[in-house]
Length: 191
Image (tube, rainbow, N blue to C red; front, top):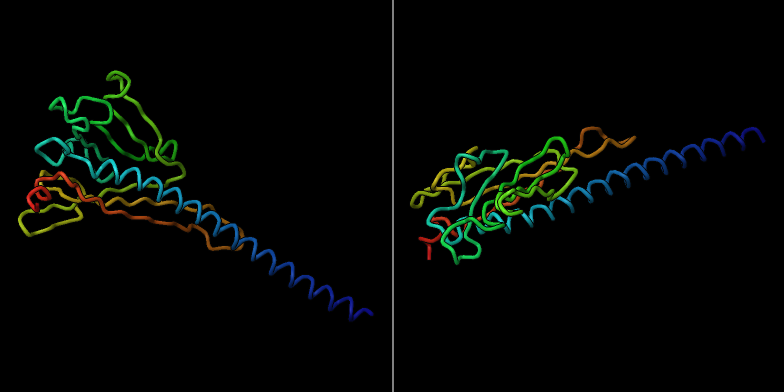
């Protein structure tokens, strides 16, 4: 009887350990899935807006003085009826806000020129912009800062996943997207 009780305890312990490991793996995968879903949604917003950079202008639309590998400010003449980028949605900056852990969109012309800040996605750990320049048939990049010859932007969003018991710590997920600046001088020269 003692032997059968001991065997039952061992089998039950092994079953509980396997179940606990399976729950940990499920928790990690759910966290990873949530992170990838939210970053893909953010990339959709960023790529759509950044791709229109320079629309109705003679440049690629990137504001060189305010753009780095951590923030991107661009202009476009979305409404294309006034010859300038002074309406809401026509002078936008994307950057990472360390306080909230969010990618933020700042529209300088919203609210009657007072500006409007809105979060694009939360639970992000970092954002990075890489700039590719095109001069003739020569492409360089990714560069940490844009130039007048920038024709493509690479966006990298990084998410640090929360630690889960029984799983390796400090896991990250990186999602990248390339955005062609359709209105850059290089791209306009292709058509």
